[in-house]
Image (tube, rainbow, N blue to C red; front, side):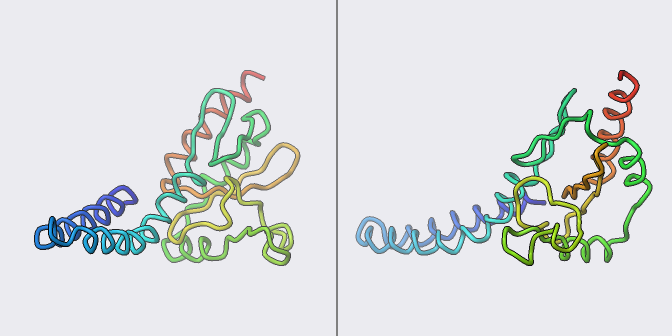
Length: 170
């Protein structure tokens, strides 16, 4: 969805400035350029959320590390039982939206997750984009993490596979 949304917004912007350019270029190049910049200011907020998702909520798993956004978590630190428990918990759509709205971890007193006893949001973002699912896992030390994901099932299957293999090799 984010790629489709971004592509659609950029295509509408390019078609719009192209259409304006047909009538105004070369006579009114300055006007066309100014309007293109003005409409670019309308395009940027439409692209802010997909860019934020890419930076703060991108998940990569390799043989030793779970990387979420800007953070890295060693797989050896993740409790496989918490991953198994999270994979058994499949929230309904309405519950998923409610969780995404309630998961806030802004660096402001009173809005930090630890202030409310909630799991810390991993990745560097201040909140979960509406509609994304959140998965709560634990480390072996007992720290709880909240991870935003678009595909809960695939993420938990991959994480369960690598943490189980990591646990068996230990």
